[in-house]
Image 1 (cartoon, rainbow, N blue to C red):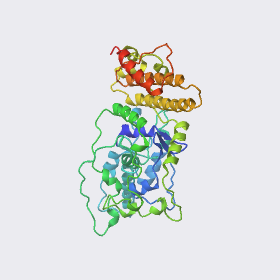
Image 2: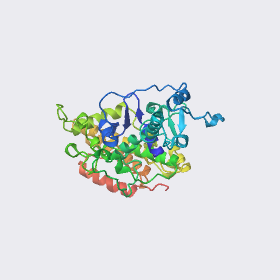
Image 3: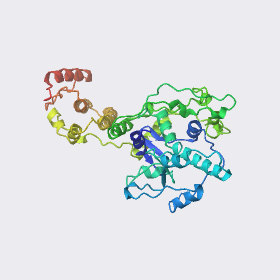
Image 4: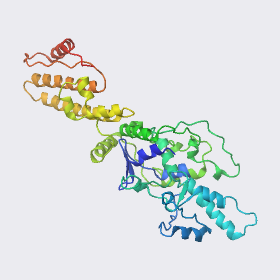
Length: 410
């Protein structure tokens, strides 16, 4: 488990919509993911249980005859959980002469142990909890937040779709096939069975992952990792048949449901609405808008809060710079459209157009300076010039800009 990568994803979880809010849109695991990754049945009655913490040791003793003792040091207390080491010590090997009741107890403990190590793994990898499902509490930074549930599903789902925090796949280990038992074939998760581990500083990697998710676009997401409709799962030749057994519940054109083809325009409209309606960035912008109003030199930029923080940190926050550039370029593009439309209505459009082009050029050079492109600023002039054709104005402005431009202190 990559704790840093999981945390950056949980930071974007929204309990009200049960989705992750990313720049690429809303994303969440679906029934298709549950079937393909875990091969669990998705129809029938749900399994419900009492998740109250009160008296959990007594309930455990009623079920399996033992419970871990309460630690003497209050610092070592773990709420409603038992160490895996304790389970292995007391229930590691079932006695050969065990009666039916003893066999039932060991079977119950084995299932509890197996489910806790796979579907409902503890983030520390050492405890099996009485209560697993606490995803909504993980994204609320109040008190001590925690995350439980099927972290295997979340991890594989993330690796399949997002490159951020994705490990490198190593040589695949052979699977012990059983000729007459296809239900023991591997699920889609086996494609990630042998991967490289993240050994860097989790705090540093958390910052990196946060910045990368802040800049992730829809074009960088793998929306169909298992294959298209007619070829789902075909990339894995020995895929467990249970993974596709209930495909009728999640295929888009299964049953009598009408097929709706992908519509790029509709998706773009959705993204525009989505970006205006929710928070999609966790990293603050690098600069304020008014930094573009004056000439930019190295010394002035270096004194900004963003650059001071960057020098004291352990890495450069590229996401904040990209987000600032993105928003400013979008606004400039919109301004260009407005001034172009207005120029067709004005009787004498040359003057306003010339003024706008010069201001836009200065703004673009300032943005380039913030990115490290240390070219000079275009010199300004207060004198009014005669109305001449647009192409002449443009060529003369470029030539004058090259002659009069001054280098920054850098």
